[in-house]
Image 1 (cartoon, helix red, strand yellow):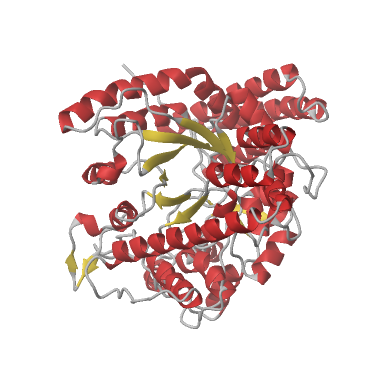
Image 2 (image 1 turned 120 degrees about the vertical axis):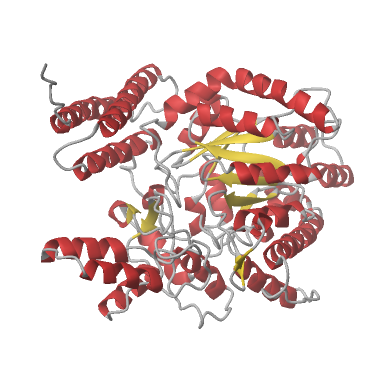
Length: 596
């Protein structure tokens, strides 16, 4: 969802029991939003300057504490207004799925014809506020310098963000994404809130995004050895998602979910066995029972049928929805121009780009105003952006402090190198475009939020980056929160295109396109490492296709209308994959035979 689009979502949705996640990338953006809300709600505000010690962690703590206080206030106001009349309580429960236990209990009470006073008391005691969770991309943990001196590792970006959350009053979860960072994981041992009490309650829970079962097992045990429990494994599609896309070696979401479903108990019990001695060695409280674990999934889900299928087939605890909520102003903060662009977007407008300075593929929207701003600078002979946030200064080609590959400073140096090479015009242009393709997403992913709140952006510009998943193509128009929730639970249908592919098939198509592109990039020959990579990738895709054939052939009570078309497409895809395998063989290097 980007840096800014959900930065104040808790104030919009938590009163309805809906969880949301705040990105902890941009502490400067948080400070600006904290000032704005402090003025709006007449809360005393004292600026946390970037000149003071540990300003990043302190800004994050202050922002999260304010969010909790304001969300608590809105939740109490919501309960009071809802309880004022019976229709308010009914309206709340109408938003819940029929399968929700709380709704079932409400209907039982309603059928018993208890008086309104008793109903109000029950409502007040039983509804809960949505969790205010946070996210850290673990790789965004660059060293921090002050006056030319590198500071202690605890001031690193992700370390400071973690500390900001750990020292806040939130009792919620931190979502760790973008792979393992052992140094950051080790740092968590210092904070008591990450450890369970005797009842198994953990104030600050760990959620890790994973793309396969092996990753979950490795990371879960790594944390357990430190006495820290992972409370949720969030399975996300490698490509069919929003934001950065971390492609797997051809592991498709369906088979991955199947492996989790088949091995869930083994996963939990084996990790718990590692946890107990670690807690004992640390002198921490030992829980009396296995701690709860959630297995959840997200990435490309777009219909109630898909949502329910995932829950039922794979025994998931919940299914996450992201990108479609960018069209819901009651849930996210998006400026009007970007909202219209998202609403009008078609399949061809949503693509995997190479614009991220992280060097990881990035789901993007064609024609976004940040890219237009980038192109204007290129045409004006000044490629690259001013590096104002410096969150992605990881490239160390030109110095230990590092530069962001989207910055004007880096691109100037790279183009200078390029000019010294004797290249043909077409080769030069290709290399030049590769350098200048990177975009300043640090600023771009927060600008929309600032403009939506009428906060001055004259120092940043008005260019907006946005990173919806490809699923956005099948939604259009601005929607209310009630409409989106009703769509998720199958009470209405707001998907705008009848030809929307099934989420599994969409991901498969993306992986096929990805494989073809990678093969084309190899030129005429491959080395042994590349041969092994493509063999592994194509083999995993073959296994995934076979899995889907069996899944859809045997599916009962679901996907009936699309089954025949899906099976036809899977057969066609198998044929295309076989052609790609032949192309791979054709590029394998010939190893000379040694002569005696």
